[in-house]
Length: 334
Image 1: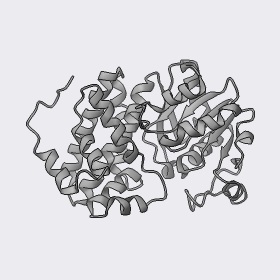
Image 2: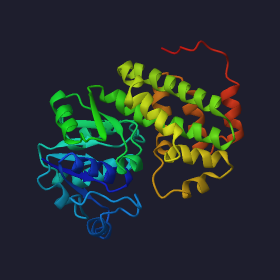
Image 3: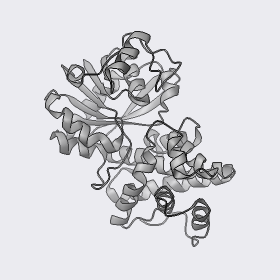
Image 4: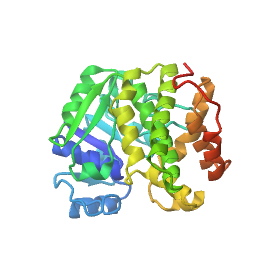
């Protein structure tokens, strides 16, 4: 089996190494020939994973046709809002029967589509060829081969099991789940909630506040998921609570760090400039809120984060909007 990982960012490079460690022949597409050569010669992605030695059998290329040639599995690891354009360009090169796997966590602007839906629409592939990898997967820890688990979600059980085998290593444990919708929703919305948690931390608020935001954030994800038809059990698992806790708790999380910078008083531009990588929660907050409103689902934390990241609400107003809401039962809305 050959896997092509399309994107040599932090998570794309890390997952490519996981595949190599599992015995899957893997080629990763870098955005430039120079980055590909650096990975091949030094066995390090100094731009995204500095100081971490990569598997010597991991090969990088700057040529999409070379990466995709003969691939049985195509893993898509680009920023969520760029998927449609990138995939459109790669479509003529895709092997006709290859499995298409999303590592991305986001909701597309305008269409409100999940990444698997974009993949299906652009390529014409059926659900039996599409899968999603999602879970508490902070890339740098996994690149260091620390223990972690993930979910391989696909409507096609045979595909999920094949991919499970392709990325199963002594340190990386994949579980299968047929609930693609729930896994993708959990992965997209947790980035938004992590920004809220980061803001609270940056403002000097404590563990009670962050626990409240994480728990009520999970309630928001669950309410939206139930209306859209997701399996409620998914949100209690790795792709739900697991991913949410990791992203909201770790300083390695770009979304939490972005929120912390806002909470400490940085402007939107300054917070964005503090990282060279995409903060998916900023990009997804608006589309998630629009999706929720289209289905009459109340998501107050998401609404505040969307307002803050679009410049319509300042940090002081954000805190006040959340604490001044009317009292409600713990479970409501569906």
